Length: 83
Image (cartoon, rainbow, N blue to C red; front, side):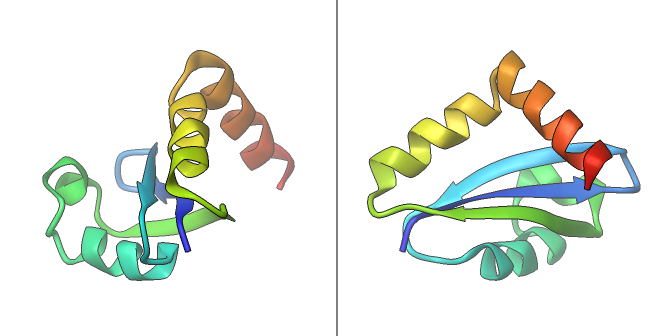
């Protein structure tokens, strides 16, 4: 099932937003923490802070793009402070 996930790195104090066609966020987290993803290699270890599932990848990709926008990053910042 397609999903969007948000990772957080205490090392870099940054978030990473990603999506997957079939794998869930925990499987992708293992890949990120193993250093298999170039863009997240320096932020290890990552923790998963949010995961959302969708019926199709198009919807997941639209959500990922929103979360990577200014409004989406604002949403993440506010959600993390309140949670």
